[in-house]
Image 1 (tube, rainbow, N blue to C red):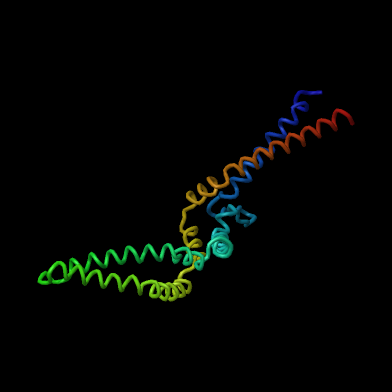
Image 2 (tube, rainbow, N blue to C red):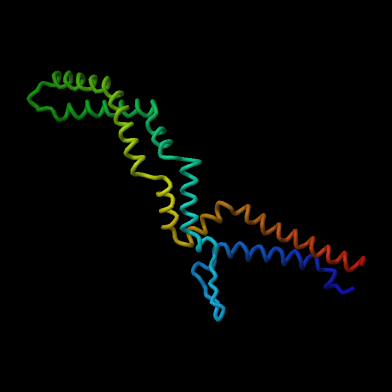
Length: 199
């Protein structure tokens, strides 16, 4: 029996690996449609061909399953965030009043006035903050869409950037697919060799 036949498992592994490498490349390439002469059939990579559809689907999935605008608003308007905003705003208000009140007013009166205004602000701010948060939340929810932002960002990416992003995220999985192609090819070649040897 020839050495070529004996090496068929290794040839099968090589073919399986190479086939999967090409299949992965065809996910991204060619970027623009290539028309086959005479047949009139156009050929384009899967992601370039369906980029807009993929972008829209990803945006909808992220907004529906991972991060909606309501979730984002709730994160921003937690009690801790509210208290921190009120604290910083009150301090800034106090400092601004001290700077802006007329110089004719004695310093101790400026301090008293600034302290009184800051105290009123800190007492009234939580209720005001809640009302503004609800109103702003409704307005943001009506005018801003996480899905639309993600869709726009993906559509604005050039092919190189998009391909790089996908490869960075799925590098290990894609390498496993290539390796699996080699393993399957090896066992197919081994099966062919066994058939030739025993039948």
